[in-house]
Length: 227
Image (cartoon, rainbow, N blue to C red; front, side, top):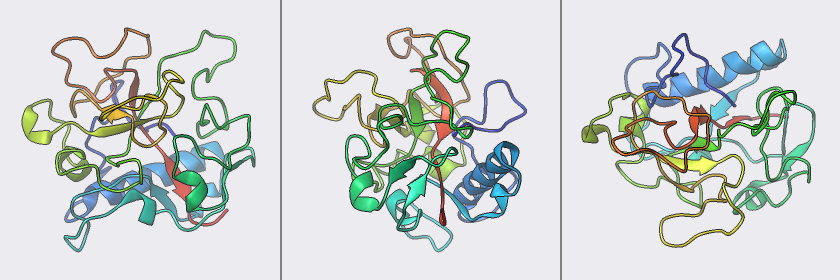
């Protein structure tokens, strides 16, 4: 799902969306999910939405893992196609239970392929999606969340947020701390500042500090707790 912002460069790593206090980044991200769902399908915003984001500290000061925020499933896309029946199907390189039409290109809030949201236009390079999570959907590390989704700073103090790929950047998997096909944990972004890059440039350019500099705009995954 896309970010909603008055800035052409998006929110960067600051997802508070008007929220304040402990846990503001997660609450704001949930509000973003509900707001965009309502724009796509009036009435859908009244559901309880959760952004698939981990954080070092939530409202109670304790670690928050994305996989624990989203309910037990099943989950469907905007057009009613199955994404996963349960968490076991979610935790994999690609959701194992997903409809074949969307497994390798998780759709946006309108059910449109994320890689080519406008079928009349060429494909765009928008695969990077903020999660702050490892391949089990749990906090990737203390510097992986842009200060728990409250910072849009490009300096090193905000860390480098962990990203997943809404569609595989390649199908070869990866090694070490990289897996270019993994939907929830592929690699780290260049930084937390707002940025949009939809043209394939082979990865972030030297000196880049933005959430979208490797291919995207700092999008987030959104799940409703009820189908």
